[in-house]
Length: 172
Image (cartoon, rainbow, N blue to C red; front, side, top):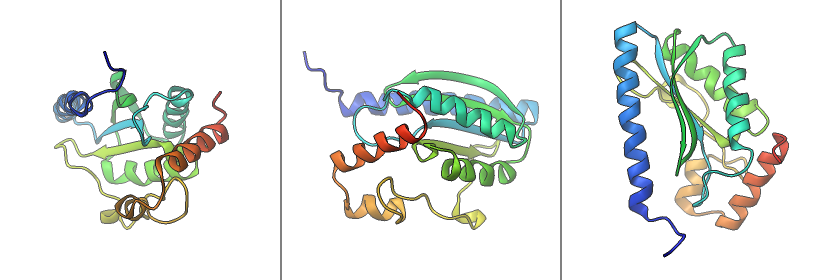
């Protein structure tokens, strides 16, 4: 039996999270919440459950709450894609997204977090739509989508950068 995970297993995990997201959006509409916030790991490669990610995710949530966002947990877990939390925010999505982007940028290790912000109708709030900078690459200061598209960095180089981000965050 192989230890490697199949692509379909990752897709199944993504589909399961999407179903939870849809349920959270329904709850947001029912309770008149301002936004749905999905906090997860943003790590390349097959191992999405690297040591220290759970603690980093918890620090990210604490920092978001400290910024004034009133969060109510809806779902929490760990799957093949790593640790995640799905929460409702009292504040509108257009207020939460800039705070989430700042957290991803400024929190030590925050580059490894993925904070998606959705309206209660399930519409993602896009950085560009709010005039916010694109996400930076793990390795260099170029936009991440550019480095990914051009395959500018090898997987070992990316994973070394992930480990460096985790070290800066104080991960074991």
